[in-house]
Amino acid sequence: MADCTIRIKRNGSAMVTGSFEVLDVDGNPFAIEGEAYICRCGQSQTKPFCDGAHKTCGFESAPTVEA
Ligand code: FES
Image 1 (cartoon, protein in one colour):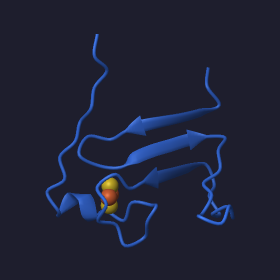
Image 2 (cartoon, rainbow, N blue to C red):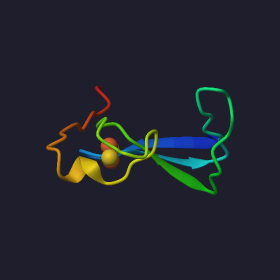
Image 3 (tube, helix red, strand yellow):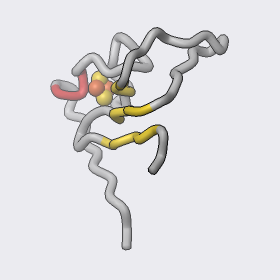
């Protein structure tokens, strides 16, 4: 089992759980406990984190594993 799991949310963020760090452009860690939601739509005002903007900007993305 992986220490860290990234789950792509339908038409939304990427949910990260487990043991991980998110570092800024200078390598400084954001204060995160337990889970993080990373923006995939590009519209968040709190990048790299999701602020819910995907719900109103029309973002559509639901990638699946191809067999
Ligand atoms: S994915 Fe939620 S604001 Fe971008």
